[in-house]
Image 1: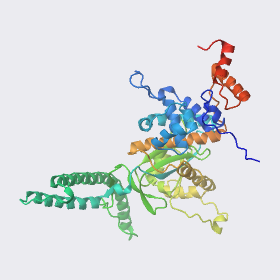
Image 2: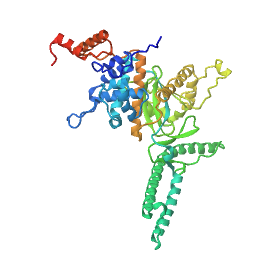
Image 3: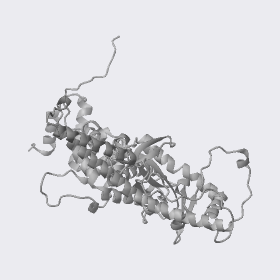
Image 4: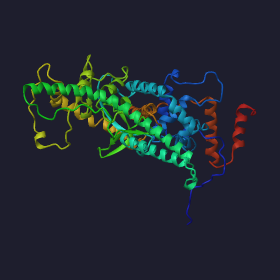
Length: 501
């Protein structure tokens, strides 16, 4: 018996353009995203009200397109452009026939930071209605390194830049002397002495600019370090008056930037940062997030160029919109701890901070499993360090702090491993902030879709379209899917409604 195969026919045209919704599952996230974007206030979208120039792509369509592509791991504007032709879901978002090019997509992403920020807040307000997000609760804060759109090999250190400037100046003197010789001979490979001098002088200007930027950045750090040194020096001198102090005498910060401080020519605002477990360095930004411990939604986000989290506790808390959440408890790891930061966060009836003061191992010993006696609370006015240590040792503190690792770290894992977002597509801190807001917005919508357990209802179809689809389906069922029945279809319309105009 011969093998039986299903009929494959790529040549016979369809009766009418198909309804793309027939190719998309009813519970697909795209319906939810379209409905969510449609609920955003119209005033948040920018448009050319004058009506001049070329026709614009609908802003809601562009926002939905970016959110869906980011939620499915596509961040390049060229990849998104290709998806408008090859991906059925993306074609449905774009209405089937609209194909914005990569430059239009990139421009919309670059110039709509305020739209993303407003959408971020509005989506969280929706989550209060549909996903169980509470206004008062516990948040966990943490940061992760996201690679900048620049190579670390395009950077130069303060020391190396100085050495290169001296070397280039000597070469300029040598080339100038060679040009003044009467028996001037052209350089090898057809190179020109004036062009070589100009090239080296331009390089000197760039290196001098790099050293000036590094020096300005270090001056800001030095002011902060000087304040810390003054406090340590005063405490050291006070101990010296009573008895011989332990440890080394504190040293003031250097007036000149350390030689290892770097400047990147491709993305000057990015920094060399320790990544992973601290075993390697990357040209990166430090992306911060505050995550609700019950819903795993990101309620606050920002991007900083600081390699560590020491000064980021309060900026992250301030990034949480007041209308969305008012944290009652804040969980943070040891990288965020400082006495001043904790005091500022808890001032004026602020949230209660649970912040580890030292790294602890993951191993749980037998002694840790045994019930420990509850320590007495420190006396009123005790140092913040003692209060924090006691707070973390209480049963309530232990239970709360356990939630930190299982909330914010999985969120970063999903963003990096599931979505695949590990590098910013745009350069500069402001553009990195714009893209991180878009990433958090896309993550939140994907999470809300799962928490809500249902998608938005399908868009209504006009009565004419309903009749067209019904008649088309009947003809297909009767004559078969590959029969040429265009004339039959139009004839059926003429029978029911008169001649076709």
